[in-house]
Image: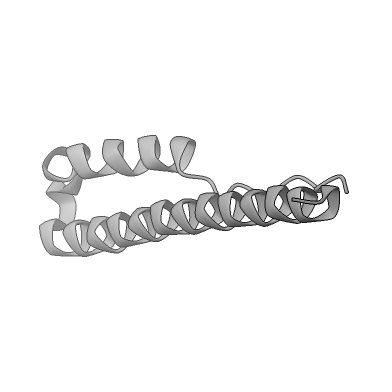
Length: 78
């Protein structure tokens, strides 16, 4: 293999890895959005008791907000 082919293969692998990481990051962000929707439904359904009955969902949502941020990517040096 020529040097250019090796470099092209490395770049292609980095691009694929970046795409996979970005896709997984978006999946986690959409899961967080689903939990947010369910939390809103729970709060509307429970009324004044939502502080007690939806606490577990609110805690899960807060934890997901901290952990499931959409990650960017770094520039690939060519």
